[in-house]
Length: 210
Image 1 (spheres, rainbow, N blue to C red):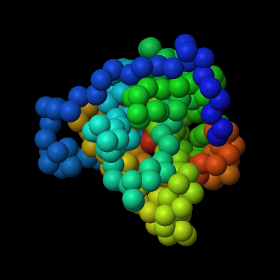
Image 2 (cartoon, rainbow, N blue to C red; image 1 turned 120 degrees about the vertical axis):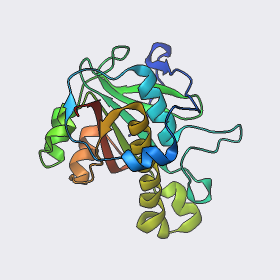
Image 3 (tube, helix red, strand yellow; image 1 turned 90 degrees about the horizontal axis):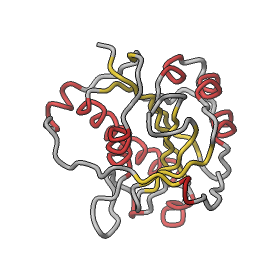
C-alpha cells in the first residue's frame, strides 16, 4: 500500500495509552483464550488506542516499540479495520497506525470485512467483529540487515510477538479475539490495496460473549 499524504482531517489523534492496569501480566496469561464469538456492540476508541499501543506503540523517547524487533528494523505495519458502527468516533474503513505520533490515518473509506472474510476461507468472525487489527510486514526493512533470514524467520517471529501483546491486552480489557492466519495472501493483499506489504495475521476484536 502506498500511503498518500492525508488531509489534516483524516488524521485521528488517539487517546494516550495507559501503562498501568488492574490486571497482572500473570493473570492475563492464565486467562487468555482464543474467542471467536462476540456480543453485538462497538469498541471504544480508548480501547482501540490501547490495543494499537500494545501492538506497536512507542515506549520511550528513542522510538523503541512495545514488541521486540530484529535490529530495531521495525518491518511491521498495523492496520485497524473498522466496520460500520464499529467504533463510535471513527468512520468505517481502513486506518494505518502511526506509532511515532500514536495516531491513525485513514487510507480506505469503505469497510472491507465481507471481502476479508471471503479471503479468509469464510471464517465468520472476521466479518462479525466490529474491529480487526491486521498485521503486515515490509520484509525489505529487515532484509537490508539480515538477508533472506528476514522473511524466513525474523519478520514472522516479530508478528508473533505483536500477536501475543494483542491477546494479553484484549484479555486485560475484557474483550475477545482470535488469531487468524488462514487466508489467501494475494486475496488479502488485494482487499487491502497492498503493494509492498505482506499480510501476516488478522485479529478480529469484539465484546466478549461469555
